[in-house]
Image 1 (tube, helix red, strand yellow):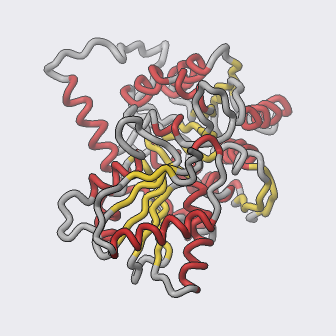
Image 2: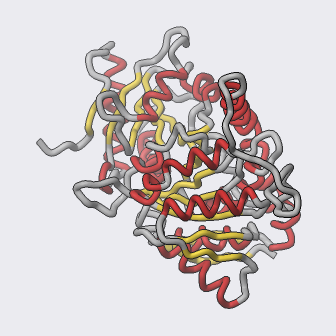
Amino acid sequence: MTRSLVETGNHVAGLAAEAARAEVVAAYPITPQTAIVELIAEFVSSGRMKSQYICVESEHSAMAASVGASASGARTFTATSSHGLVYMHEMLHWASGARLPIVMAVVNRTLGPPWNILPDLSDSISQRDTGWLQFYCATHQEIFDTIIQAYKICENSKVLLPAMVCFEGFILSHTSMPFMIPDQEKVDSFLPRFKPGWKLDVDKPMSHGTLASSDYFMELRYMIQEAMDNARELIPIVDKEYSERFGLPYHGGLLEEVACSDAETLVISMGTIGSEAKLAIEKLREKGHKVGLVRVRAFRPFPIEEIRKICGRTDAIAVIDRAISYGAEGQLFTEVQSALYDVEERPPVLNFIAGIGGRDVTEKDIEMMALHAAKYAKEGRFDQRLDWYGLKR
């Protein structure tokens, strides 16, 4: 029977790892993620969760242990934030290159210096090219559901890639919200035990991850790209199956659309800004402005065709990024621009950098950005595409 609970986002992630029956959990603390692995430690020590809990000496070691566990055929979970994720960088490539379906909760936090423990998306987005699927959550329910779904997707024989399930520190990690947990037997039916196509076995020794010459290396990398394409097709299917089976919200698959069918202006964002934007869209609609929202849920693989289909029929687009690629623009903006590059009569796209270092982005702020984008398009202006919203000069 589905249960209703009120918990912090961190505890939701820990409960999802338990429901997924993660067999190995590699743990190292870092703010604001620590409560996830602390909760799992309590579950394991009490016998509630049948899992091997590995306390390691660093985040690099946490991912190294996860790689080893997954390669041995175990369903593996870990969690990190900020500098911890950056410290894992080398091993992230190992996980994807070895085609290991590890799931990791990433509680987004800024990168220093200067030091700041509040959120932006710079930590996870700076790992976008490591071959990991990346999901960005907006609610506690979505955190739980996405961790379960991520295992289902990543363990599919056509994918076999790791995934990050990202959610913003403190905004979600330390706030308490209601969410639903499906019956464990139903979760087990949806997500059966992991059956790897191969695994490391001392009784059946084999070489793995050894030297690959130029005759084969490019093809191995092509296979990762092909797996991402397969994941792009699978994500909406799994999300819909999960929703129908458990009677829980459908999160939109690759992206969530709100009031897009007749929208003249679109707001595009990720994470909690996308959630806050729903309130702004409602207020703008009440005032007669035809504004819609696209909340990108999967940043990798990126929903290219879906963006083209939705954005091709609008007059203006405001992309709100909670990160910046220095010397260029916001990374989500870059992806949207790329998806639209050959669309006939492409609408003007403005990029707003907002919420860096945990600065609040309110529904009023989002209203202002949407109206600015609409005015920009109406005036036929293309002289400015990057705006650091609310910058103190």
